[in-house]
Image 1 (cartoon, chains in turn red, orange):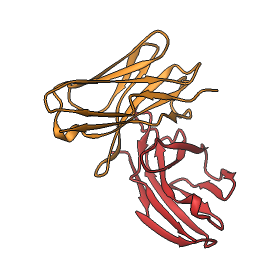
Image 2 (tube, one colour):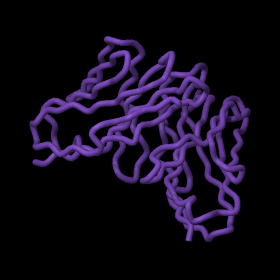
Image 3 (spheres, chains in turn green, blue):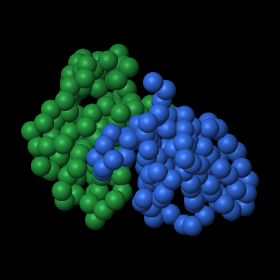
Length: 110
Length: 114
């Protein structure tokens, strides 16, 4: 069964303290890995798509990387406004558009 | 460019009632997918519509149904509501040509069943 696992479940950082979130997946024939940010009570906001191992994408303090089995979302010098739940998702080997992980809840403390 | 619009934002319904939720995708997008989000299960796929046809379906009971109109707008319906149907219902819009294209979400409809 195709699965997406994110770790840690929750992460608390001091402002400026860099860290990484992990997303591991088991799906054959990866057709893209997607990162989203979700604020409480709102819909997920699209961040990045990665398609092949070795690919990297950056946006402000965020950088996403991809290997054959996992993806990392690196957060450099985070600010309190980066606090949110970060979700990763992949299309499964069948026809489900996106299978989501449970997310990492990030809190950045000033 | 307008984003994905979901209406209503909030709903309170009684057990046994039915409910219809609406989603207007980004202009030019032909695929609309629906997801249910709960604290325990996370985001779970309900179904996907493309060019007015259901293309994929998740593992939900038949009480959950949907449709898509010729202008790509979509509705989902839940009949005989149960307490466990309380959730944030999200729709996602993509151009839909192939799996792996970016999907953009609306703000969701928060459904509370009492």
